[in-house]
Amino acid sequence: MGHRPAGSGDAALGRERATGKEGGMSDGYQLVLGRTRETAHRIVDAAPVGSRLSVKPPRRTLDQNALMWTLLGELAAARPEGRELTPDVWKSLFLHALDHSQRFEMALDGKGMVPVGFRSSKLSKEQMSALIETIYEYAGRHGVEFSQ
Figure 1 (cartoon, rainbow, N blue to C red):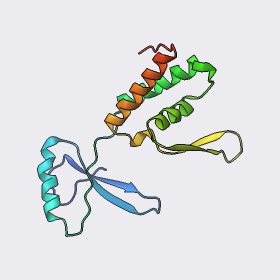
Figure 2 (figure 1 turned 30 degrees about the horizontal axis):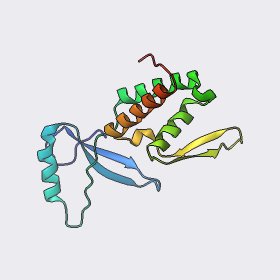
Figure 3 (figure 1 turned 90 degrees about the vertical axis):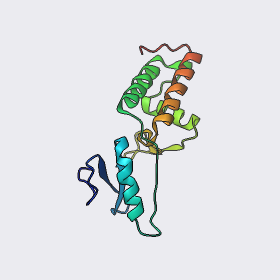
């Protein structure tokens, strides 16, 4: 991110560059303000036949992420059902409960497990809200009271 697409004429439509697994670049555009829709329409109209377009909902917010980690930390400290789990493991359990697959692999040094697979940073705002609600619901069923 950082520079505008050539000829866009709208600073609010930023170019997003992401490095793929193969080290290649994939380009996309992120609508950051409502008025940029007109610019997006111009880009689509100018796109060559066969171009691919993807429209996705906004990702989870930093506030949602901070709340999730606070809740997971407090849940881990409360040890419901006698479970002595880290916040990372709790997160994986809740992601699994919402059908987001995640698995663990043995660490390279053989000491512990490392989560791999789906990441909560990929959740939409709506999906993150569902995750947080699931955490609250589970805590309520097991007598865990949160500070928030």
